[in-house]
Image 1 (tube, rainbow, N blue to C red):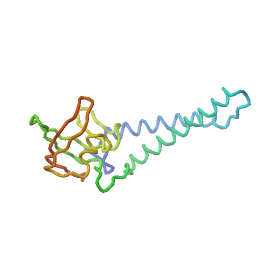
Image 2 (cartoon, rainbow, N blue to C red; image 1 turned 120 degrees about the vertical axis):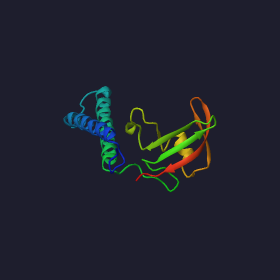
Image 3 (cartoon, helix red, strand yellow; image 1 turned 90 degrees about the vertical axis):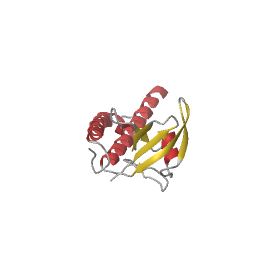
Length: 153
């Protein structure tokens, strides 16, 4: 089951847990950000590292919040919307249904997924049923026919 944001309940739960953890880490770091460095270059490096960590935590919290509220990364006119189901038929005749996800954290165990910005996702973007796509994988080049593309409801 997926929510209105296109996330499955298990993905939503994982993201909510990660958001809580990121917010706790950011809250724990906040008091140390105002500490001034009065020492040597190593002390100044520590201040810079804390600021970089805080910025990363802020970006990640925003990214997770956007996903939870349905503000997934925007999809261009040729892009694949998260939640789209793609059925592919490979050269050996096997077929596979893949669900397009915005980020890897949305993946569920046992559910084949592909991100829109992966080589397969980029090859499928802008194509339609009946088209043949080719993309590179760690195991080599793969070709498949798009059997169907079902946009999210």
